[in-house]
Image (tube, rainbow, N blue to C red; front, side, top):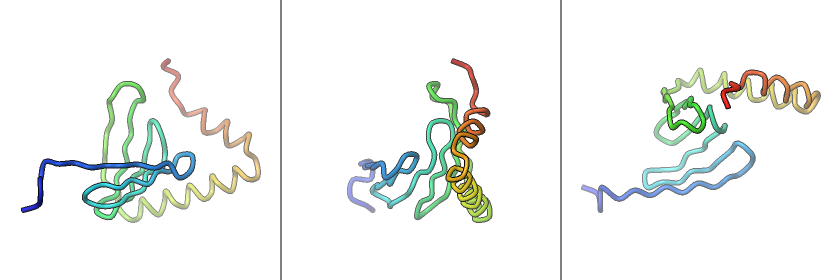
Length: 101
C-alpha cells in the first residue's frame, strides 16, 4: 500500500517548441506535439492522443514500438526538409489543419 494513494502530482516543463518533459509521482515522460496531436513517450507506456482543440474531445491509443520508430523517422525527415525548404514544410503542415473556427 502506498502513501496517500489518492494524491496526484504532475509537473511539465517546455524544453523546445512542441516538446515537454513531464514528471509525475509514477515516473518521467516526454510529450511531442501540440494541440490536436500529441505523442507521449514514458517509462510505462507510449500513447498517441488525437483531439479537437478547444472542445475537450480527444482519443488516446497505445503505440507499439514499430509505430514509435516510424514516427521518429517521419519527424527526422520533416526536420531535414525544414532545414532545406522551411516555407514549403510550413505550407504542408498547415494544409491538413481543419478550418472550423
